[in-house]
Each structure stands twice: as structure tokens, then as C-alpha cells.
Length: 230
Image (tube, rainbow, N blue to C red; front, side, top):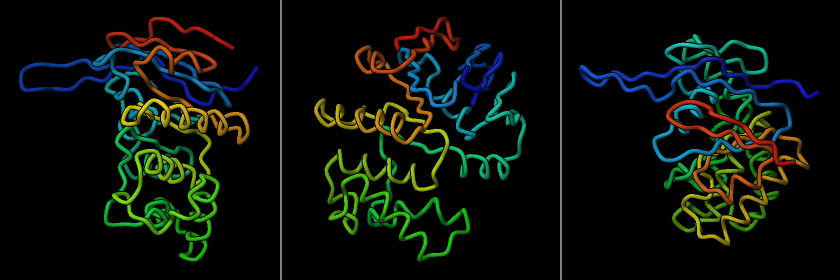
């Protein structure tokens, strides 16, 4: 039995909008196992991005508990959350979130700055992971000089630079054409199988979700069921 690396237990996230309260998550519970390739599937507005933000230490729940590798992260200060996510979690965003005034190499070195890694070592680590992504000849190009697929690979390289245990991908193929999206999914599978990374991705797409080892179905802020595929 693989160990649980992420656990959400009765998690609520409520936003106050004036006199109204919006419950993005409503008592959601989920376990993610080490080395798993998990899809969180749900329609728009179901709470997928909110759940990813909580799991990724970008936010804390209104109620309930979240454990990341046995550490309770439910009520930590932002500085503590930043330390944990900087060491354990790599993010891949739908919109890439690259800085257009920096080269691919400089974008990938950014998270390493906060780990107090010397500059020359940062550059080598970033260059190595970009090379692994097939971007050896594109390292000095800025995002506006790269295709959508190349930008997403830079974003994946940035996520991998800190050698995280968990990779979180929020609609990772959402801004890509179908062929490029397929390549990105294959890359995520390789990171899971060959690099032994725990990969969690959110999607509304049936075909993408079916590529996971297991699907957790999110509806109206709750995990309503899970299905193991392989």
C-alpha cells in the first residue's frame, strides 16, 4: 500500500462577497497517494482551481484539514506555506505564467533563487532541466519568441527545477492545440512513471481524465466519487 502524500479532510473554502457567502468547496475529502497519476475532473465552477490552490499551499481552508506529507498545512502562515511549496510542489499553469521580459533560462531559475542556491548552480540546474525538455537551443529565447508548446515545456521545466515530490497541473493543455496537448500529457506521464513524481492535474475533459491512473470527480465543491482506471 502506497503512503498517502496529500490528504484533504472535510475541507471548506468560503469567500465573502459583500453580504453573500460563496462556498467554493463544501466539505471535500480526498487522498492522493505517493507516485500516483491523478485527475481531478469537474465542470467549470466545481471548485477545481480552488482545490489546487489549497493543495499547493497557495491558500488555506476556511474549515477542515489538509496534510501534505504528514504536515498539517491548514493554518500555516504565508511564509511557512512558501517554504513548503518551494521544496515539495511544482506548479504547471494553463496560462504558463512566464515573465515575458526574461529568457526561458531566467524563468526557470526564478524558483531556485528562493532556495538560496548560488547563481552558477542555479543556471546549471535550469539549463539541465530545459535540456531534458528538448529546449537546449531555445534557452535564451523569451516567451514571446516561443510556440505555445515550447512555453508550456518551459513552465514544466520551471516546476521541475526544485525537484519537487508533487507536480500540480491546472488544465495543462487548456491553451494548446490537440496535438501539442497530447505531447504535454505524454511528458507528464513520463515524469510520473520514469521520474516517480506524484502528478495531480485538473481537467473538465473526459478524454484527458481517462489517461490518469485514477479520477476524482468534483461537483459543487465536493468529491462525489473516485474511479480507478489502472
